Amino acid sequence: MAEEEKKREAGRDQLAESLADLFTSISAMIKGELEGTNNQLLLLEKMNQRVAEEYKGYGDVASGLRVFVEQLCKKNHGFEEYVQQIEKIDQQLTEFEAVVSMLDKYVSLLEKKVQSAHHNIPT
Image (cartoon, rainbow, N blue to C red; front, side, top):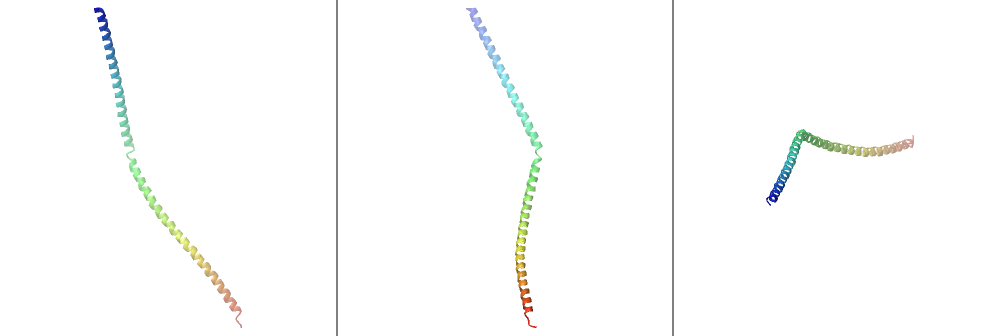
């Protein structure tokens, strides 16, 4: 019986060693995964810093573009006012032309009456 117990103990020792090796391997694997994840996070942080440094000046560009667009909007508004003034002047000219045309017809009519009256004057 002593031999059987020795075999059992040897089997238990081997099982214990196998389990210890398994846990050690799993621990090493988890540690490796964590280190890999940590390295990826550090790399991502460095990349973010580099991108932030590269695009740092673009805030000024965006601000400048915003000012430029605002100036364009103001100029466009001024241009619209100018176009409205031109349209008003054009309307006034159209009305003036109509008045001149009417006066021209009236003058022509008066000239005809004067000529007619001149021919009908007894001499």
